[in-house]
Image 1: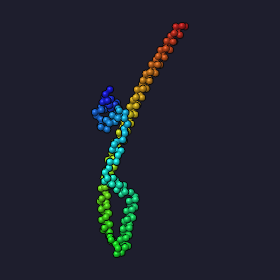
Image 2 (image 1 turned 90 degrees about the vertical axis):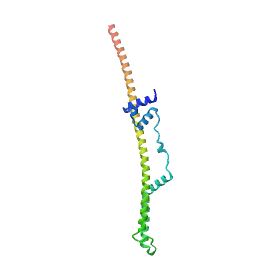
Image 3 (image 1 turned 120 degrees about the horizontal axis):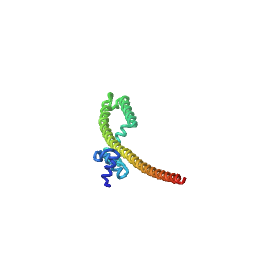
Image 4 (image 1 turned 90 degrees about the horizontal axis):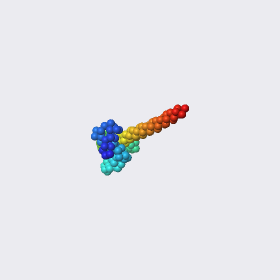
Length: 184
């Protein structure tokens, strides 16, 4: 049997539609079942192909979204305000702390897009993971259905064999009964 014919039969048997009507993901699952190959990991999930700047953005997002950063930043702000309130003539940013406000605005202006870049990459990785999980789950479900069909076929064959054996036994019993009646 040609591989395409087998795939078409599997698609019809397992999904109830022709192979041509399947989505690319569903086709890949039917192909994997037909060839009995393991699903494997999506190549996009295995390597770290991020650039230096992407790794830096991910690191900044990880640090900027941590309690360590929050407490450290709070300590720096407290020290800044305390120094500029109590230092007298040595202050470099007197109340209302305009330089501090400028620094915080610049940090926020730079940190927000960097975190968004990191989140966009995480969302893309999550989409790839979700697609891979879908393929694995769909394949498992279809494999179970396929095995169930095979078991049903085996049960049917066994049932036919049992019925034939019982019919033969019944025929032998009838013949023996007829012979016993004839002897009487």
